[in-house]
Image 1 (tube, helix red, strand yellow):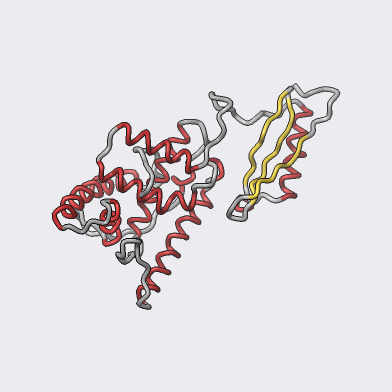
Image 2: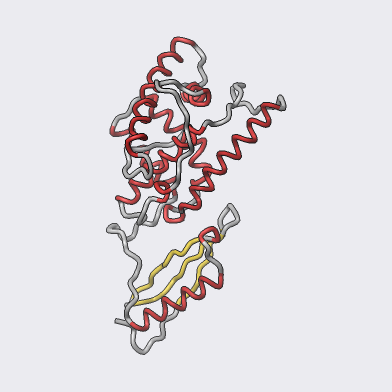
Length: 269
């Protein structure tokens, strides 16, 4: 029921983020309690005017006694984590379950160097299909810049002096698969309603049959191994990761789009 004798009221909250966007939310009182209703950012179409209208609509529903509060997690008091926090916990749980060392390092590389710098500061519910599409475009733009720099003779290098290679479509798809896996767990844990990464189309990949590593994949393997270029160790590691890639490609072909479930994920290194 609505709260008779007391007009429904509330306020719009605005949180300025490091990337310049503003996260809008509502703080309202209903049924003897206070609730926070998360809305979104400008990328999701939220403005002051739209937030004002949403607040008026929520207040009208509260007065009519038909408003339904946001679904609460069973843990109640636990705040929504950022992607950085959740991905770190996700990776730690995966490592504790037991994964190959090369897999652990590769996941750490993907997270630390690619996913976390882009998504790390966002809360899980702020990650939308549109934001994931922007990440994909960001990686394609980054590849264009790296290729242009290499052609100009000023290609970027890693801290150990190795030349940085442009990312292949396969590698960018790999980041999207990892993001999908992490967010799939978040859906099962009740943090988000749906998995936005599962609805983002993967990049086209034309690749011959067989477990062959592309240049940027081999580079990431070397980086994960600490930059060592000793042939025996590199060959063994490459063979191990190549087998992982072959299995992953098989799963990718089976699942295609969208990727419905998770396999277990981790950070980048």
